Image (cartoon, rainbow, N blue to C red; front, top):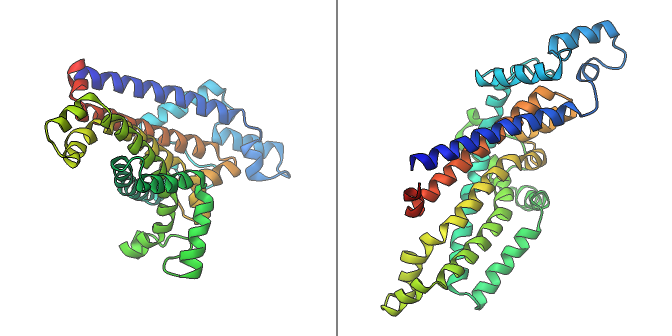
Length: 315
């Protein structure tokens, strides 16, 4: 188990190193001068040079990369060119929107998808299976931003049961803040629930065709008992894999949803930073998102070992 964990930690660290190089290189080759964008076309060359020196843009690219990475290792993510504020403070202000939104979406997606997948697998080939998987197929085909606009029109404009956008802040009270996240969470969750339900159904159907399942049935165990006591646990590994990938998507996919609902989260901040050429904000937030994805994947790998004892004893 220790060797299994160490191997996953090494892979995660290598992923972060490669991701930091790729993110830095991609943003460096983008056209545009941040200093010129901030001061405008009428700024003098002397003023531009002073601002470039202040932002560290006059240093060679390897030096800028080393300064950026070494700063992150001690918690210094740099200073935003646009807001003249440490990036870590901007992240703290906005992660309280993005993280609850992603967790709400993942919870809703799981609570919907797992029962639907089990229901469809238990009734494979029958009308319940066809209807549930047909609805899941529609959910996969609908883009989440279109679904978000539809939800906004129905529940915010027509029925007026939830706000159409904005975030009052957690200081305004738990329920008002949570209420403003309901529509965005549903818009993110339902397409993901459609995918997860199909994976759950497929995985369960494959397990139910195994020889040991037929043996259990031959011993007189009920269909329900075989499904819950023998098949479900063995079908969980593909489901856990998709859940880990979905959480990564939900964190990064908030860029669109947060802009649709005008939520002051990390996704909207990245979008604004890209338009304003605020490279240090984009680099730092993207690498934080990559670190979150690596951490989630590590948790998923450990979950594999908990679900499947063979992984704990293999190494």
